[in-house]
Amino acid sequence: RGADVNAKGGLYGNALKTAAAKGTESVVRLLLERGADVNAQGGYYGNALQAAKELRHESIAQLLITHGA
Image 1 (cartoon, rainbow, N blue to C red):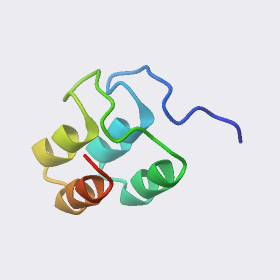
Image 2 (image 1 turned 180 degrees about the vertical axis):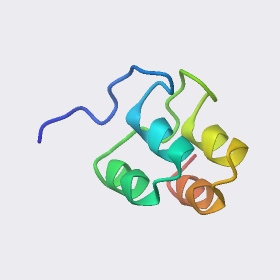
Image 3 (image 1 turned 90 degrees about the vertical axis):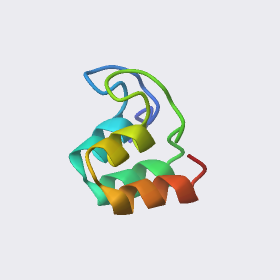
């Protein structure tokens, strides 16, 4: 409760990109619902869409595109 969904840090740069890279669609959905910046840059892979595409998580990539990536 009260966590910043856009906090930066770690290997992937932020929580949304980590969830996209790991293929955890439920976490991606939750973070997007809570206002995560779909186009945030930083860390490995650049942004969440690039991570999802690179690691072949196509349903997550489509979800991110639907949310403005």
